[in-house]
Image 1 (cartoon, helix red, strand yellow):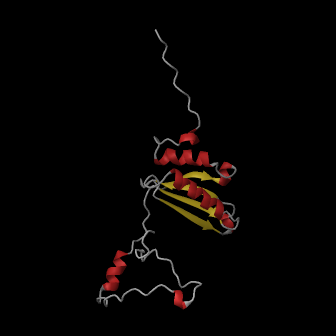
Image 2 (tube, helix red, strand yellow; image 1 turned 180 degrees about the horizontal axis):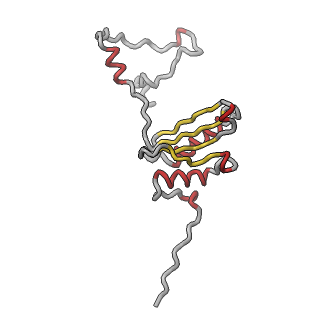
Image 3 (tube, rainbow, N blue to C red; image 1 turned 45 degrees about the horizontal axis):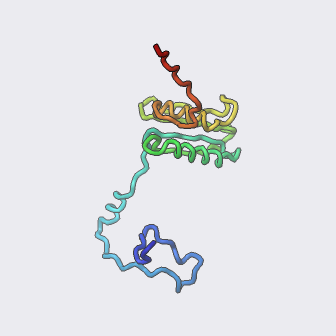
Length: 163
């Protein structure tokens, strides 16, 4: 920052961690005493989690240690489909014997049809190639969207014959 006096209090680093007490940041000025309903007002300002659509859910077997793959997949999807194309992605670790080996990607479009399965590792015979998964999700959430190089080379229309 250009001016060391303009530090966002929400983003200010905690200078007390690993430092001596004398190096701690100065305490902020005392705030006025809160009103009796201040707690209720503050709680009303806290954003509540909502399931916004389009929403992607990635289920993965935690016992198989597939959290990094699920995380990587979600990162790639958010980079390709930034909000508002996909508004939220949820990673859901599963660790029961019934869900062993599971890696599924679901898409909820909010059309009251529920989640649509975009990929299932068991029925597809393996993990998704990101190019294919992105194409499937694009076809569900925004069919007219170009994926650039992930779409591959499309057949060019034949030039009209000149008379």
